[in-house]
Structures are given as C-alpha cells and as structure tokens.
Image (cartoon, rainbow, N blue to C red; front, side):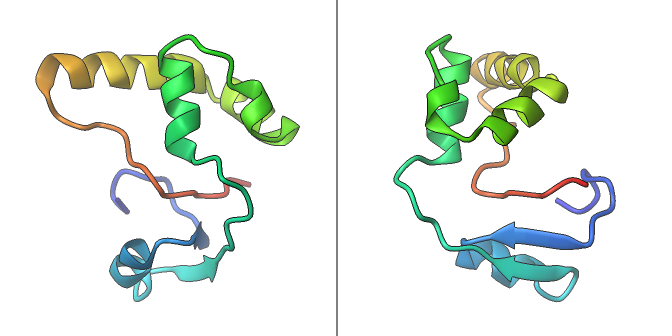
Length: 97
C-alpha cells in the first residue's frame, strides 16, 4: 500500500487489520464509524450508475469529483471484471491535504 500512495503523514481507519499492517510505518488515527453506509456501497453505486451523492457528505462528493474518482472507479471495476483481479483498495481512508 505504501509504494502505491504518495507520501502521507496520517492514516485514518477503523479497521484492525489495516492498523496492524501499518502502525509501525505511519501514524494511525482511529476513526469511529457513525453511520451505516460504507465506502464499498458508495463505490458500487458509482460503478453501477446509481445515485450516490446522498450517501456521503458534500466535501466527499467534491473530492471524488475533483480527483476524477467516478472515472477511476468505473475503470477499476471494468479491469477487475476482465482480469478477475481486485484493483480497489477497500476500507482504507487516506486524508489528502
């Protein structure tokens, strides 16, 4: 995961497996999940051309659009369906500054 990402200072996650893998390499900030919507649900909605903006906050919608996230998610899903290799990293949230 670290060689694929640009450098970052803090990794925000609520997943114990991610914490165990990364805690010696980067500062971890544990987050508390407050809703029932997951990033997987949002990615699935985007990939299947369903409404998704109402599932998350305005700042997240803006960020996804700013980084061409819709195109990137659809491209990753197409590649995954063709090659049977999972290309999306799920359950990992990196806050970019």
